[in-house]
Length: 280
Image (cartoon, rainbow, N blue to C red; front, side, top):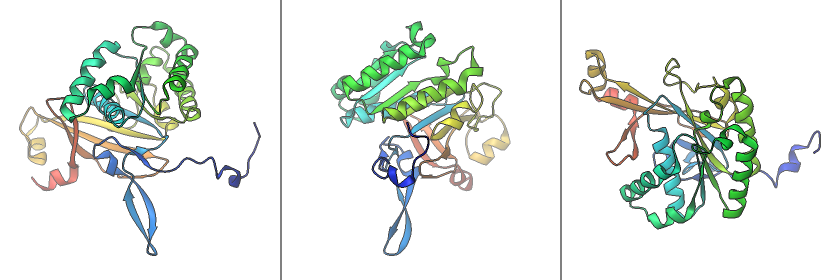
């Protein structure tokens, strides 16, 4: 490999900038700037950036896995192949979860059965302990099944008890996914002591510093009169929030948004938090 390269030599290698749909409000929260009639205008990207590697992080029960599963279901229904590496839960449980997603979203579950490929790293300790074996299996699946999208839920599970190696491990997977030209979501777990809405997760900022962008999901229990008055929500309910913490590939809405998780487990992004506060 050359030690240096002129910028112009990369003209034919640069990936196109367009969105890979999630069919959530995130599709409008990533944007690009284009010139129209002599003016620069902001246009929604229509999805998460193509060939980006994004981190979804948050404390437990914020909807990280639900959002990742929803993305997988939408892409599979559109006819694209998805590789889902399950590190936390045996893959048998994903079948029921994805079938429920398909029913709730009105998707063709037969397409999901055909287009989603699973690797069970939860039950196979060799995948978690020998990353070369896991990456080799992922590469075989990507080539054999013509995969275009990858989800790892969670990347944190691949450096349990060895968080000092988190940056090195995340870098290995980031470089691999880039080499294979994948659009990818890495789910990462927060520790209870970490700021709910920061991009930091277990392993520190190892994931956020390396990936192309981070989506932070949070929740706040309404347990004081001040909170109830501020948000106009009853005591004991949960306010769920989502924010794009950064993205090096394209522009993004950096506001905090309110979302809900429906009874069917669907993530539905509703409005900016500022609008909720103003309406009370």
